[in-house]
Length: 136
Image 1 (spheres, rainbow, N blue to C red):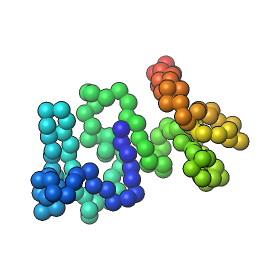
Image 2: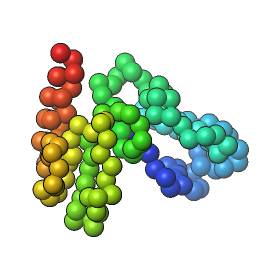
Image 3: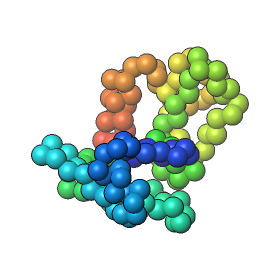
Image 4: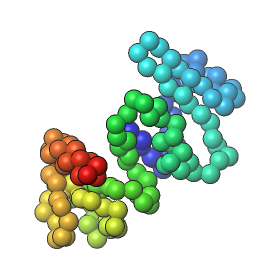
């Protein structure tokens, strides 16, 4: 899973050694245990990182699929998530040729496959079938 955010974010906690080392100037910090590890890299002077670069940082031997949240302008196949109950306006949604479906909490006036947003199992089945068809 790769998630993009437009906000300043921090996955570490003030007071922890890894946080303090990073704030003291360490450009890369790895936090590791027997169950997981995480690499934090400081990039304040870099341009925005590209999705292909971020995917290349993942261990491809241990993944089947990369789910991406954000990166709306990337030319990758995508499912748009739309929540009318959250007060969003459908006229603000950009539908381009990369959109393969829309997961929503309402019926939308669009000729595009609509998936029930509150049914993750249905969405997962759609993704699995879509992936199978891409391999044919």
